[in-house]
Structure formats: structure tokens, C-alpha cells
Image (cartoon, rainbow, N blue to C red; front, side, top):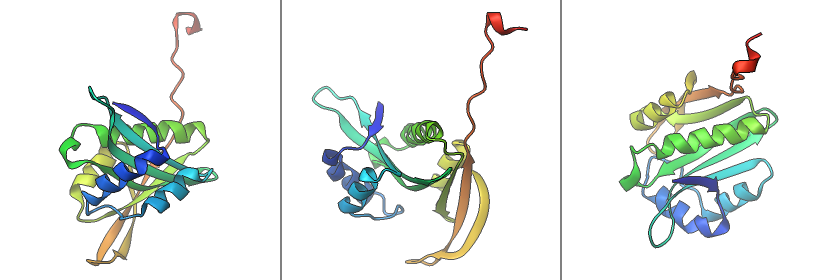
Length: 162
């Protein structure tokens, strides 16, 4: 698997994956194109290596301002869920955002979406707050989660013992 920035020719796969996941926000291809082209946007895809050609199996869409970012949308093709792809997308997003000086990532998740919550908590997100009746169709509360980004600690080598 390879995580990379989305290209225009990935839009069809992103929409297909999104359509197979009714619990995620349903955006248009134009929405993703605008975010991917925005200097403050980051859309990543997880590409599986296949014999014939690589296939996009998941995506994550981030937007950032100053030192904060929002994970706006993430989905993995149903046949590839629970294989670590979502966690890898978040990890790569975390790495890239940290390089840009981002210190905190926010997201909203439906209170009933236990599978997504497991992913987010396992990736290091923590509960920040609750927004009552945030979602419509059906009405539901949103959990606001945050992920603090900190640089990896320096590893001490043999010559750094003093």
C-alpha cells in the first residue's frame, strides 16, 4: 500500500468509495477537486499495489488554517476495511500536517458511529466536546475529537549519551 496526494484522475474512485459508505459526508467530485487544489487543503489516497494496476482503496480529506486542521472526510472501500488503511491514512495525514506546522487536528463523528470512533481513538484522537443535534437525517449528536500533533522525540544515539 502507498499513501499519496490525490490527483484529478482519483476523483472517480474517491466518489465510488464515498458512495459505498453512507455514514460519511457525501461530497461532489468538485468539492474534492477544490480542496485538493486549495493551498490549505490535503486530500490523500491509499493506493493498493495490484498486478495489473494500482487501485485506490481509501481516502482522507483535511483542511488546515494556521496551526489547526480538520479531518473533513475519510472512507475506505468496504472490502478493504479493518485492514489498517484508515489508520495509515490518518498517520500519513498526521505526518504531513506536522511538517506544515499543524499542532492539532479536529473532527466530528456521529455519536452512534462506533466503528469510526474505534479508528479515531486508536489513532490517538481524544474526546474534546459534544455538539447536541449537530447532524440531520437522522438528527444526532456529534462528538468533537482532537488529535494533538507533537514532533517525535529525538532518538539518542551512541554518541549522544552525555
